[in-house]
Image 1 (cartoon, rainbow, N blue to C red):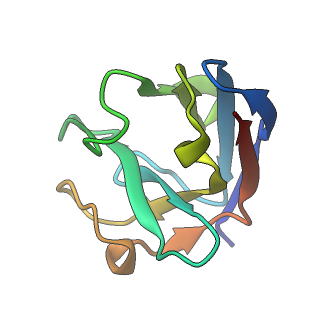
Image 2 (tube, rainbow, N blue to C red):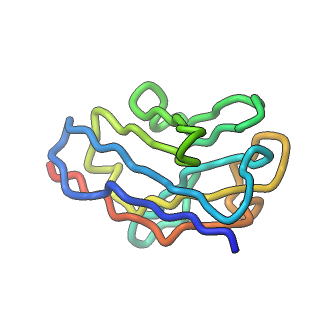
Image 3 (cartoon, helix red, strand yellow):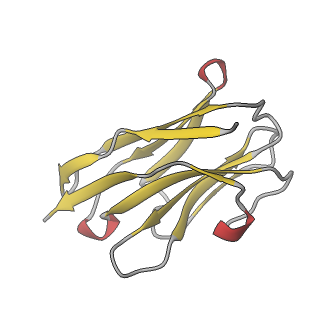
Length: 124
């Protein structure tokens, strides 16, 4: 049973920072693409960032490039999303996801496993 558990969301002022964590369990994730998505009220879920355990690289949405950074702790099987320079438009529920695929994907439909989501609210 694959489980992805996010944490680290909260309320922050514009310009502030948060670090989201995604603890993965249930199988070896070395063959997965790990991604972060977000969904704001009334909007579709959108890609934020992703990386490959096996070196297929890292990818960011243009809207977060230079502000958000994805990283991992192999020993803890945990993926992080460091979010700096937060803006009100970053307000959303953030989801961690895993795709059992060897190349980078940014489409939510290609991801096989999802966490429950964590709320991020940026006040103006």
